[in-house]
Length: 54
Image (cartoon, one colour):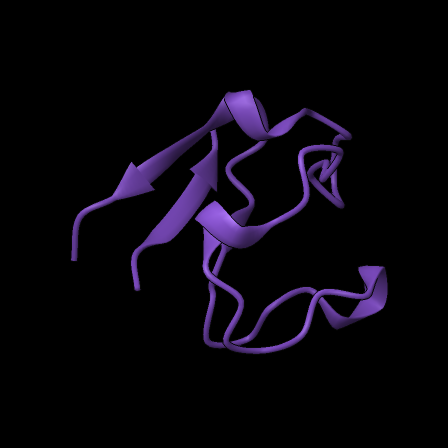
């Protein structure tokens, strides 16, 4: 699963870790995040993230 970077603040969403502070379980692919998901650092929406090729 690819990691995704929030362009405005450089936060990286890692599916292996999820976002447990916001109710996202480890192993949740970025594509499977709810539409209302927002960056936990700056609040940007999913459309502000870009895929990081590993």
